[in-house]
Each structure stands twice: as structure tokens, then as C-alpha cells.
Image (cartoon, rainbow, N blue to C red; front, top):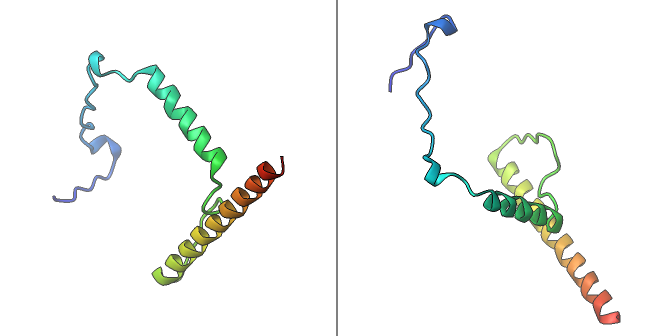
Length: 92
């Protein structure tokens, strides 16, 4: 695929038309509500894997090590939270 460069936006061809789904394939509003509810539930149950913001790493090995550490830390937090909840339920 050749690369085309333009000096001005006016020189660019118009964008390709985006196909619009027919009315029969329209998205069900109930489906969207279920998706939002599931997303809200998932974010309430699991915390973030990474802190917000951009993280930079010098090598791919450092990035992989940070990902592995973040996954293990989240697993430990989830396990300790679950064991604490189990202890509270057992004490009732």
C-alpha cells in the first residue's frame, strides 16, 4: 500500500463512507444497559491492575516484570480480601 502525503487537508480525498447498519440490526437498548451494569459490577469487584497514568520502561523485560508484579499484587489483594470476607461470614 503506497504512502500518500498531502501538503494541505484540502488536497486529501474525502473519507470512505461508514456503513450504517440496517434498522433490523440496531442495537437493543436493553443490551446496552446490561453491558453497562456488567462493566460497573466488574469495576466494583476488581481493582485496577495498573495505577492511572503512563508508565515507561527501558526494556521489554522490565515491562514484563512490572506486569507480572502487578498481577501477583492484585491476586494477593483479592485473596486477602476474600479471606477477610470469609472470616467475617464465619464469625456471624
